Amino acid sequence: MAHQRDLDPDSDSDSDHDSAGSAPAYEVVVVGGGPAGLTTAIYATRLGHETAVFEKEGGRHAAVEHVHNLLGVSENVSGRELAAHAVAQLEHYGGDFFPDAVDAVTRLESGQGNEPRFRLEAGHATVDAERIVFATGFRDRGPDVPEIERFAGRGLHYCLHCDAYALGDGPVFVLGHAESAAHVAMTMCNFTAEVDLLLDGREPEWDEETDEQLRAHPVDRIETTVVSAYEDETERGGSDEPPRLGGLSFGDGTERDYLGGFAMYGSAYNADLAADLGCELTDDGAIAVDDRRETSVDGVYAVGDVTHGQNQTTIAIGDGAYAGLAVHKDLRRFPKSLEEIRAADGADENGGKAGEAENRDGSSRIEPSDPMVPAASPALRARMRRVRDLDVHPGLRGPSPGRE
Ligand SMILES: Cc1cc2nc3c(=O)[nH]c(=O)nc-3n(C[C@H](O)[C@H](O)[C@H](O)COP(=O)(O)OP(=O)(O)OC[C@H]3O[C@@H](n4cnc5c(N)ncnc54)[C@H](O)[C@@H]3O)c2cc1C
Image (cartoon, rainbow, N blue to C red; front, side, top):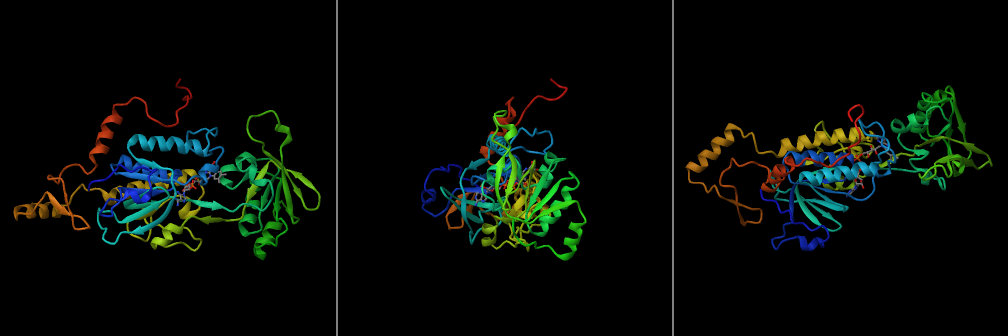
């Protein structure tokens, strides 16, 4: 099908519609521009599909000061830098990126097969999509401690698998009163002998068995309130980086120095748009998906943190790859089955009008007279020719050990 690519992201959404009420159409629209969404979009674009990403500023990747556990990528790189490189790659290969929040997604009644099935309304544009991928992530609930959030990523952490290494062998805290806080406090005993579990004046919510287990671990339980966080004075003046957390002050007037710690107050999945479309959610509120990352609604996929809370950049990237491949297999025109080829041949012999087809609104459109033309749009194929002639491509590139 023909795709309109002249969408002006700054125009009013109403003016993006033509007189027949249609909106610019993409084969794939990804909602969310973190590692999961951008990976899906890069795969879909490089597999020949007209693809757009809509990204609302923020997300968990934007809170990552130092990316850990990402093969070959230095921890000097932040989540924002990583995303900026990925956006440059997406656009380089022919995908579109809109820094715009999607406010609503609706189903187009008549859309089926490889026709637009969904309409997305964002702050500054409205587009149609054959397939949608939700990559909207989740929001960590922060602690109720004045001053502490300014140390996010520099002493206040939310991801044990990312940051336990950086806190290894130092005094650490775990803030929270739920089962997950008890579990993380006990797990931190793998990394250091100094673990405090801070209840911040709340009643523990874990059961008796967990309580007994916790008391058998070398974890100090501190019940009083946490009233504020202070910065690490030892680093003052020695670094251009913003200050790190140095410790916490308590309601009983005491202070404790910490290298850092974790806040465990749960999370809220950004799953409202998917729920509005009828996608099933898990008991936790994540979007339920199958192995191909497709939701319970045909043509709607979901990837990354919004599907499981696994909480890792690499897993989000892997999800994006799965979904990119699945969407491609879902949309691609070739290989055609022998039945399709025979049916097309039969229609031609019977005088079928190969060059004309009917749109949803009853108007006609010209289909390629040769049904064997490549499925990827002419614009995307032109981009493929141009990109392969270039010597330099966007993306992170630093010195290679042993190769310079
Ligand atoms: C402080 C911190 C440090 C971390 N450190 C590491 C680390 O070192 N290594 C590691 O592997 N992992 C780390 N993680 C985890 C990692 O950041 C996440 O697992 C990863 O970002 C998940 O990617 P995602 O694309 O699924 O979601 P996100 O990164 O959260 O991206 C989702 C995006 O969707 C956007 N969005 C939501 N709703 C809409 C909408 N309606 N319209 C448009 N856009 C929308 C959001 O704004 C957001 O940008 C860390 C997390 C935190 C919070």
